[in-house]
Length: 460
Ligand SMILES: [Fe+2]
Image (cartoon, rainbow, N blue to C red):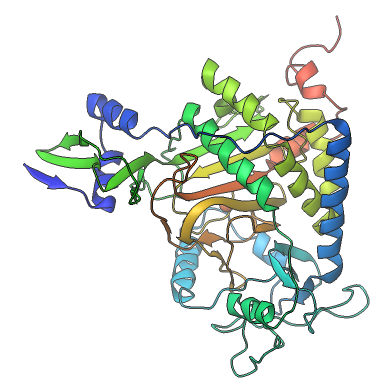
């Protein structure tokens, strides 16, 4: 029998496994429970208020100082009006993404508007404090144009000891720091990010990542993530593998280990899919998959409150009108009380590659960010010809139902960290389904829970 260890071949074979072989390989590739959680913090009401105040202040600084750009030739109304499931558009997006693979990525905070001045994308990353091209107030003047091109972030030839007109690449930021310019980080603070990664891995130890067959965002053969063990790994006596068609596929040995990939949807109020009658609304299946995973979900929401507060502050300043609508819908539709909102749902993309797509169900601004240890993984917006560095903690809030977006190929770094956190990229999408926002419009706070989604009276 031949023995295969190649990551892509093992993953592809695993995606087709059935019965006993599948059970075995899933058992061998379970997400491990992390050890030694981050130091506990006292998070009383006073601390919580202080955190909210600080994060709101940071977001306001971003609003005041991050450059606002206008994208000539972009009309968000026209882009939104395209049919959503066009195979042709998706193929075009894939081709544009491939053509942009060598482009330098933009690594600086900014806000982008279409040519009518409608905000369409907010990027929270790094920002040189004395950046000469900072646009003081978008309301006072017309935003400068951003002309996408392979070297747009650095504007070839204009790169000097200080930042050029579009000195926005990672090397520009490094140069600025070396020149003594203070660099501000507008993304998720590192201590919140560390805690979020720990909590998300702990959640997926119980809520096993799984794939949905009709998911066009992720390649179906992308079923397992393989990573190299670090030099300090404990020698493994037993090789773990599975057998298909007289071939042995290795999951784990002295050098490599494998982990399950998938997507979890944690949505408070989710419309039933594929029903001819008017949709009923329930918490999504992953909220209540098993008794154990249900406990893990509740625990996860409790331990990612700071993360939600950070994203809430960014949403509030970048899309204030949508924020009000979302917040009201969230208060009416919340199922797990520990979640402070304002998005009704979270999709967690556990260690998968992400193909270009538009999100079919999302209402308006969606926040995306990622956790983990990996290289690559830039964010592409093919309609806008924008490419962002998009490292762990960077946040992008944008109209995910209207704009094609995809993630460049990423590779996990080597080994586990000291807390048993496995490497790889964990994508996070905070969103609200359009149907749910419409359904919850004009409902009072707590309505969804107190009426069983409108199916039973609130009081007897
Ligand atoms: Fe998406």
